[in-house]
Length: 184
Image 1 (cartoon, helix red, strand yellow):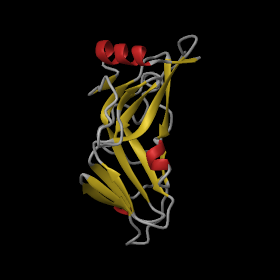
Image 2: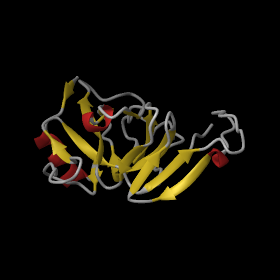
Image 3: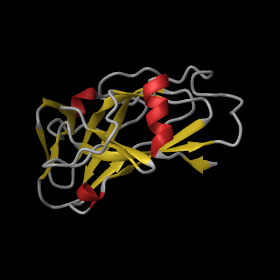
């Protein structure tokens, strides 16, 4: 399994619609960088955020998730409270090829500020907006800037095509748009 370079990412985005909208060069002047890099793609966070709140003393249960545990915000700058958590989504819509697995890592600019980004792997033939989990590990409020880079996706191409893809399984997060809450 090898990691795929900028030329492959660019070709797949332009000919197969793997990433839409696609930014073919890295943008960085006055913003947290986004776009294609040497061996990855720096994705932008959209302006839709769901910020955890404990106003109603809710319990987080992945089998019976209560959407009331969040406060919804549509904003250019999201403030994540200290030691708290928010969900967001990528600006980009991804379509993953059948022979590729995608791993996401947070950008160092945010990591150095105590913000951790978690995303589960994007499986072969999955498609949708990626729901981003953002943890503020600091004792201070933290800003996240919409329409700027938040994380980097790395594309790993398998030596052979998988027997069963995410699409074959009719995965529950297939084709998701917007910020998607846990499903059972």
